[in-house]
Amino acid sequence: MLLADLQNRVRIALTTTIVNEWSLLSQAGGTSRPSERAVAFHLGWYLRLMVEKSWDIDCEYNRSGMFLEEAVRLVDDQGRRIPDLIVHRRGKLGPEDNLLLLELATDRADVDVDTAAAGDFGRARALQARFGYQFAAVLDLRIGEHGAEQPITPHWQWAEHDGGVVDVGDVYEPDVLAEIVERAEKALPR
Image (cartoon, rainbow, N blue to C red; front, side):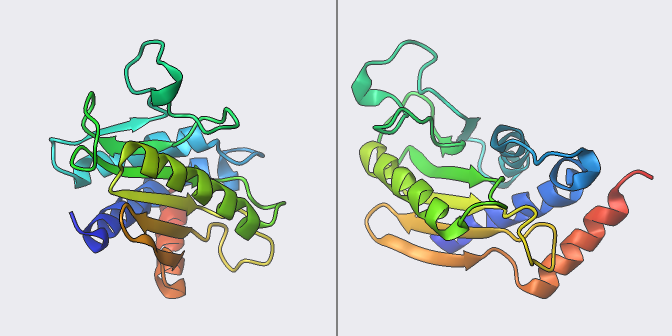
């Protein structure tokens, strides 16, 4: 699959997640921001419809469900579990069976988002190299970012297995994002 094709599929799944799960992503759902795990579940749920059935989509997958030797655990050298979402074929290794490793960020309103994203991206790239994922991405939703025009301003960074960093930027153009947020707010039950 080509990068642009995969990005479009993730963008469609994210749009569906924003519109259908707005009560989770907005302050309408409570006083705290959603966990990465909760958002990754919904994003994976909608992404499932966007990829061929031969791919498995898992959140916080431990590769086998059993105790694993250190060499094949999906954790970084500091013991943090990543990634939040993977598209792969269970039980197989290598680029032909590992499509996407995605790290998700939701709670960045009070930190330097660029510095935090660089750390996430470094960890994602290390795991991408270790397990041969075709693509690695960090999707930072930037929920409640100070001074932003919208309550959510998704930003992503992508890398190819053999090509390094290939795309960094906003997921949506400002007018498209405004339309998505408007649709999401209208869909909230009153």
